[in-house]
Amino acid sequence: MNQPAFDPSAQQDELDLDALWLPFTHNRLFKKQPRLVDRAAGMYYHTPDGRRLLDGLSGLWCSNAGHRHPKIVAAVKAQLDELDYAVAFQVGHPKAFALASRLAALAPEPLNHVFFANSGSEACDTALKIALAYHKARGDGGRYRLIGREKGYHGVGFGGISVGGIAPNRKAFAGALLPGVDHLRHTVDPARMAFSRGQPAWGAHLAEDLERLVALHDASTIAAVIVEPMQGSAGVIVPPIGYLERLREICDAHGILLIFDEVITGFGRLGHWFGAERVGVTPDIVTFAKGVTSGVVPLGGVVVSDTVHEAFMHGPEHLLELFHGYTYSGHPLACAAGLATLEVYEGEGLFARALGLEPVLERVVHSLREEPNVVDIRNFGLAAAVELAPRAGAAGLRGMEVFQHCFERGVMLRCTGDIIALGPACIAQASEIEAMGEALRDALRAVA
Image (cartoon, rainbow, N blue to C red; front, top):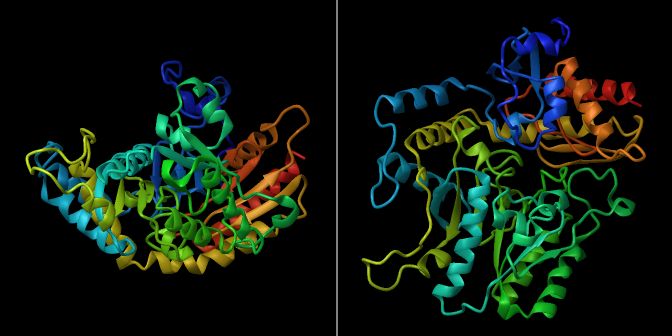
């Protein structure tokens, strides 16, 4: 790529970097060598010092239609001239109903009712609260227990980190997490799964761990199980063939709700509207966010089944059915962006394009198998991860160095510890995915 060399000092100009506390960031290290972007279009970011960055993770798993798609941008601009904010409680606006109807039509039957939030974290906490309230509404309030999974990520609310299974996210808050939460074992077994392409053939039996928890706690205490169809934040952990199907069967047998956290897997990441369609399993509740607006405006929510929804629709009509909501639920700008985004996905055939790009990404990442320090490679849909051996006594450092080297070369990927994740947008060209792979190859050799 012909562009200026990476110069972090040139990007700072007169910016005061001290005031901002960045999320999930090594703040002190970042401010010594800041990485700034100030423009974006399509598959690329641009930096203040004139460099172009190929976006290898769709923003943060969210810009599935690329950056600044003109139809989505135009819809948001037009909405600003019409309605900036509508009260979310006891009042509605047309686009919120239109978007909810569209999402309900796209979700698997019988998921037909949408509750809006503003982020994936809020969506997950909403889903958990609905699950608990559902059993209470049915007169089965003894079901208070929630089951998550090791290595799971369900946002950063107290509900989400309670059912989540990534240890560093929980450690500082352990004394305030929800009681009555337990976790399924994770599905990573390098001895049997390493370098699997797509869903591993081994591991369906790992779902039986739910039967162990049922026997331990008794099914009558368990409200819901929440899992990601594909675990993105933990490093693209792909479900074994038959695993999710077995979880569904066990939940049905014991009257337990099954929640799919589709904040990452929804809207094209697995080549479909929802990952549930890709894996052939329908949950009782689905969470969504990120790709629903292609990251243009924050929006999240849940879609629940007819059975779950109807459990609340009893009693006097003047009483609230659910004591829950947000000031910005169904924000007009977000709904305008969402409606336009869904039109772009459908009108431009982006999910079929994603399915066509999947084997390209698979080939590119698995070509890195023999590179230095690579211990595993995983892929599913337009998501892939290359796991690295950690440096002795410095876990996460190798991954950070690889990430930084790719950034300097003009490709933005993501590091989570010593795992490098790739998640190109549905609009990517095969040549751009190849460029991501070559940048990563070069980085692996450079930091070896």
